[in-house]
Length: 279
Image (cartoon, rainbow, N blue to C red; front, side, top):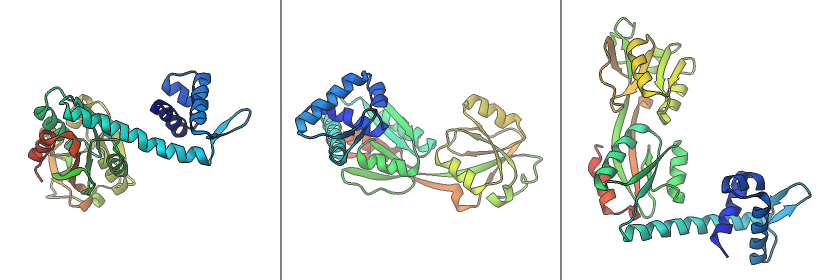
């Protein structure tokens, strides 16, 4: 049995149709259909319930898909472990719920192993936890410690959300503010801020948010707009002219990050992450 056919079956299950899987895999539908038939011949049973115009996984097919996922994951992990032992590992997959700890982890990785390729993915907290558990990422940056086998969990850093208000704003004289003080206001946000977006949206349900994806434009607007600006001390924004940085008192405005790193990455990588921690 070829693992390539198991990967094809997983794609059909994940994407929900033969046509979508064929497009992703770069096959024609007839070619993929013939490959599925050969897998069924290998297993001695049909994996799909077929009608004239559709095919859906049957009970046996669903069981085989679950085993296929485990086999494909084991093959992927085997290849990566062999790369590590041979000193040839050239890429690391990172799942993160926030950008600031990712920047610090990335800096640590390229210092420890120059030339390494880093594949970062911004995820929700739940997605990060599932990804490191399943082996879909090698490093997980989360909001709570994860105790997983074959991973080291490192308390990594704290981050605080700050409000930048114009000097003439009613909030500018405050020593600190709460989310309640800021309801019904307009805010400028950088778009790719991970879980912080959920914090702002849930804590300020009546506020208006302007989200900017271009970092250069965001920094320019932060200096010229009258909108309130959310940022953090880790965001790399220098003090903004004619604005006051005000701490936010709510618990939701303070985060602690943990980095879970697969032991198979090697002692140099894990050690570099540990050395970059400032918890």
